[in-house]
Each structure stands twice: as structure tokens, then as C-alpha cells.
Length: 155
Ligand code: PNS
Image (cartoon, rainbow, N blue to C red; front, top):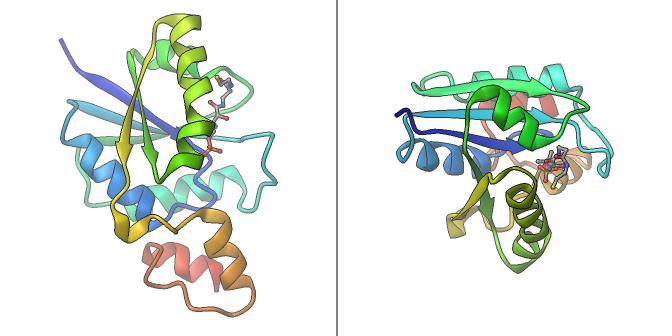
């Protein structure tokens, strides 16, 4: 049986922390599908199509990882569509855990889809899409925190 997992998020834009989680997660599944979705609770920065392009560019040497985008659909329906029984989420600290836990429970209750939490590498604990975008918007150098293509886009 193919072990297929989905790694969903806004990725607005992808950071080195996301890439680290993706690279580590993919070692534990036959197929890992990064699913980029619009989160209505968050103000969008990059258009979804650009986030997909930036993600594909950032993972270009990574075999076994697909990048897909879905909109206006439940994540559990995306999982069913893609034949994935597992969701993977990176956790940077207690705030992420508190945010993710109800969604993990809801997704399991809705469709029996389990969520695996992967602790982030401490190197990236403070890195978020919103913070790198904010720092870059004031002219700050975040080139060490994001993939090259994202840094070029932020500039
Ligand atoms: O990176 P984010 O913004 O934390 O990602 C959140 C995302 C897009 C994974 C979440 O909002 C989501 O799952 N959206 C799809 C709609 C859905 O299934 N909502 C109910 C979640 S229990």
C-alpha cells in the first residue's frame, strides 16, 4: 500500500522552516503532497498561483514531493481526492499546537484522517511567513530565512 500524506498550508510565502518540515516529512512517506490553500482567516499576500510557483521552485531538487492547490473545499475532501490518509503539520511551539489541535481533532472526527505533528528545527522556530514579509517590507534582510526565489520575490 502506498503511504501518501498531505502537507497543507497557506505558504504565503514558503519559508526555510516549511522546506525543512517538507524535506523531513517526505522521508516517512512514499508520496508527500504539499497542498496550498487560501485561508480565509488570513490576509493573502502572494496570489495562490505565485505561492505554488515559489513552492515548486523551492523544492525543485526534491523527488517524491508534489505541489497542488485547492480552493473552497474541506481539507478532508482534498485528502480523499488525493487518496491520502494522513495530514502532516509542522509545530514551532505551544501556539501552533493550540491552533492545530482542534483542526486535527475535527479532521479525524469528520473523516478519520489522522494528523502527524512534526516539531520544527529550533533554527526556524521564530520564522513565519508573516514575520519575514513584514521584515522584508521595511527593507530588512531575510535572505537567510527563505528560499532564494522567495527572497527575489520579496525584494
Ligand atoms: O498555513 P495555515 O494558514 O495555517 O493553513 C491552514 C489550512 C489552509 C490548512 C486550513 O485553514 C484548512 O485546512 N483549510 C481548508 C478548509 C477546512 O478544511 N477547514 C476546516 C479545518 S478543520
